[in-house]
Length: 260
Image 1 (tube, rainbow, N blue to C red):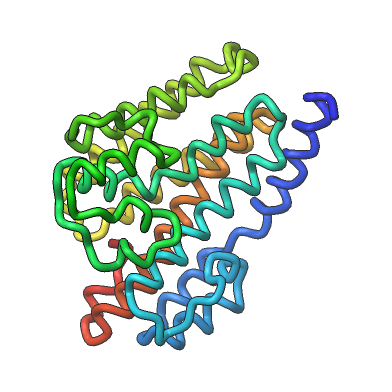
Image 2 (tube, rainbow, N blue to C red; image 1 turned 90 degrees about the vertical axis):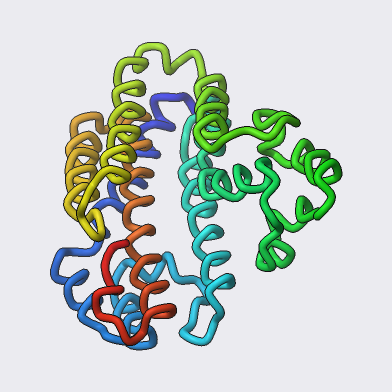
């Protein structure tokens, strides 16, 4: 399929998904649920059900987190499959974003958390012995950008970002300005979240989402729209995860049921 036809196909799929996003009223009704089983039931009456898979209120927290990481990988792989061939490597690289914090933890010599041994993606790097762990990390898909020397969190993220830029196709040259603007905006959002006195960051997340809704519309038919779609997907999944995990871990605390 020629790139023009592939982009048109991609936009049609994204537009359908974009039009199926939950309304503020659907969010409000779901988030009014006080306990996890009711919350999940409410989500399954909305388009948000696509993030839930086999999740139920009896799963332990580590199993819930595995489900959410898998849901993100599926969302990224779906867009990669719709995208032009030369963009797939860059899109697929986004599937590893949820793994960066634990990779940072392990590279700095942190203890192996119990849940890691049951994780289908990460269990092969769960070695207590530091050298074996580093060797296993080198063989992981993220290994080539992490290296063998323990690094701090920002450096891991920067190396991941450098690799993403390397994977961008030549056809992205005409969109360099927009791509870097998108990166800077997300980095600024993360810095603002760290510095914010707000308890849940809802206002900051809403601002980022509103920008990418505009970006999606303004750049319809381009890969900028596809990347904006994935930012919106990430924010949506983050909000679902927060609702599930807060109700699972803090069932008696209404203040815990925020977009934390």
